[in-house]
Image (cartoon, rainbow, N blue to C red; front, side):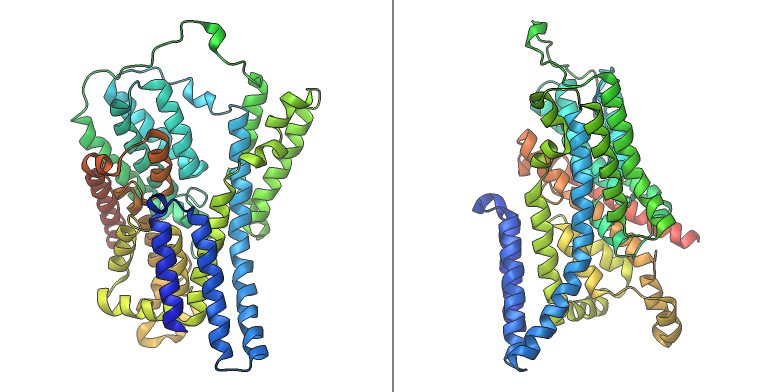
Length: 451
């Protein structure tokens, strides 16, 4: 049973990693992997225990894990809907219309910092889509634009790592109570900033002159009519960003799960958009409503998270992850090396299952467990809320994927939108991303050493 589960998971993982050559959506591979793993688990338990007893125990575990996973999925669904609603109202034009510079170095720093902070408020995937769309309006020609897109990938992943709502892996750790909102911001802001600054500084010595701007259209009549007024755009942008920023406050005040806060914000936006568009005809109103926007939400990504998290939870239930955790501790010896390795591995495979696996491999340690651990108290201290392991895991899993263009959702989105080749990114951007990642990890360890 255990060997079959591991084999199914590895094959499923390969199908996810080779999504583009196989031309099979990773969501389909993840869901199939999850169902097969749980099926093998219940059948394997049935060979040891009476079928009814084994089935009841496994189903109980499945329901427990599904409850935890559902919190993440509902949060993501709410956040994605809010961002799509802002985008449908063209709320992000408030950012794009204010960039006037043509100097390559100035544009590099402006794009880098806007992406870094925008990613912390939205998420790295959405921010990448917005910024690549922005760059198409600022820089002409793909070869010229690709370097800026590479910086967007690095900045989006770095910005998402220090915010509880900026990256799906950080959100998973926050919802799981491994980290707190204030703790992750305090602990990871400077390392994440260093992760961005190192590539920016290196590129500043390489880029010279001015970036070519896209040619203006000859006829103003070709431009599309704006679907919203300035008031509507600004109102939806303010309420949308306010809703996302309000979630950590809501959780702190009410102690309710974060998905309740995001659903509250979505409800407020839903009512607001219904009110401000109530006088419009159905054709103009529908694309600006939550009902219309829900069709644009990336549902396959939500199903992918469901499948991969269920698959990982099956390995946790069967005991595979406990064995892996023991092997990592014996082979690498300390939490810094383990996290650094996880970050580099996330450049090759998806960081969501890596973080999900780490959360199952290393259970959250409470103060009582640390006090009762005796000789192991020093090791367990890394696994308390806002412990060293969890904070560095959030940083490494969030930023390590920038080293390869397929290593993060932001990179895959940029690759698809700009047709950037894997080899081009490997030659021009990977080393910059790796240097930034390593410098940020060193900064985090240095801050801990200084106390």
